[in-house]
Length: 322
Image 1 (cartoon, helix red, strand yellow):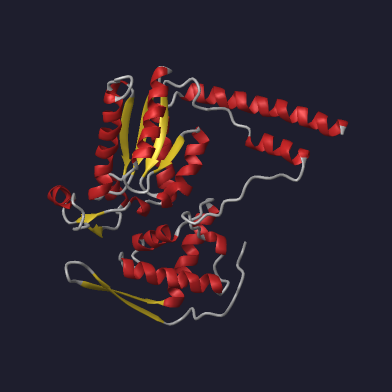
Image 2: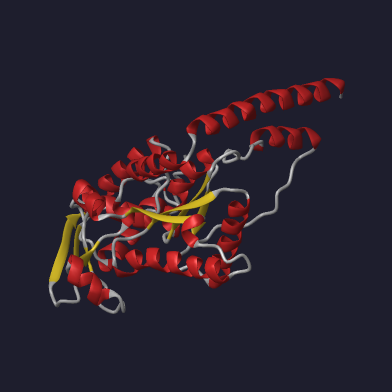
């Protein structure tokens, strides 16, 4: 735990935040700050017990889902200020919230040969997709979800691609190369896509499919896209919105794709961040297992376990001889 206290900050008093929407309406977030602090602690504790670390945005959506806060950027910013008060005052663990966009990079190092050998055991992984007819990748527009999705993607050894909105041409070309390599190895690439239910989020499925399809058709091999690629949107769907009663957002009227979206769904949209972490990981696990040969996967995991045991024997022998 890292509840380091730096100073006393006021954690009581009244909250009264005016949230002005594009249609001219105003909704107020009125609450007792002490109760909000308790709500924050409750949500973070629940997720920590399940092994998850949330971002501020995910915390916001869990409070929205519980009708504890107004779903608006003004209230979101206020929540961030309150969270800072909690952390500086030592009532919330600093590591209970993470910033996935600002991660320092430090080169790998060890304390010596024994440490390097132990790291080899800890990190030893076979390609768990080896022998599969379908090579699965998970794509998402939301970097904030990477920490949650990564737990499941690493378990099945599938590639996690974080686009941060629409993907770049460079990233698309790299994906195209992977798809061609898979095709040459008689494998089909399955991209499981996760994004918001809003004008851009839904359109990104089309964008990915069309841009990769164009490269495949016009590239050096002239491959028919349907022979080697399938893009499967697994969330956020309208069925999931209704099932989990997710809180809505106003549709982004400045988005060039808003007109068609509003004709079909109305003037509200939903963010995938609002799904609870266990729901999201369960959804991803279900869809990965739909495309993966689980017998081949389990055989590879068993082989990996056997080789780790063998490797540990070599290390134990080396340490004894030392």
